[in-house]
Length: 133
Image (cartoon, rainbow, N blue to C red; front, side, top):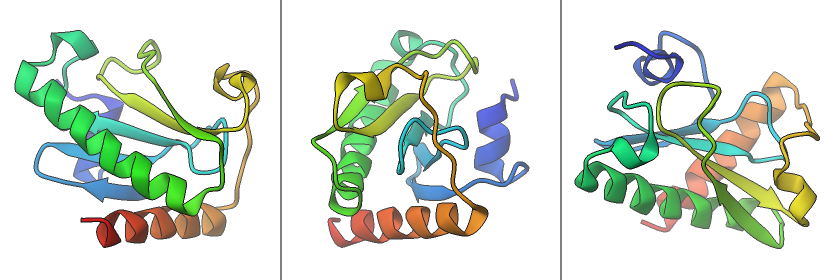
């Protein structure tokens, strides 16, 4: 089953890739809550997080941790929040959001950046992830 995210992973839809391994893919959210808001997705298109096979779930969580560590090196924040909502795209995904306060994860306050800014943010996070592996 093709989803918006499988099309992003395949390159059919342009995106700001942050990281990739054989099982997972990370890219900047194009409607971010904060600078550096990243989505981490498994490459298999399963709708619900807890329906993922155990090994895939563990791979996604481990991958998300690596991305979050790189993210916090690049984007100053009190925490990197991890949230799973999953209503907007039928493909399991994890939001990693740099936050200063709880309101930063309400999905009500959005920020926007130019294409060049998004490319630079993705590049910086990607480099930080690579330097930690």
